[in-house]
Amino acid sequence: MAAEIEASFPGATVELIGGGRGDFIVKRDDEIFWDKRNVEGRFPDDGEVVARLR
Image (cartoon, helix red, strand yellow):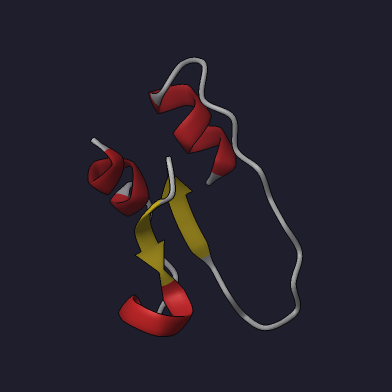
């Protein structure tokens, strides 16, 4: 997924932070675009995160 985001948004940097709680959160400039644990309840399908970031 990091590669998909970086390919879709040149100059983007994806930071992966291990936590061990099952969280999967995608943020840009402190705005949450995907939150597996607290909102969506699942991992995104291919292309879903990129579509939301656009």
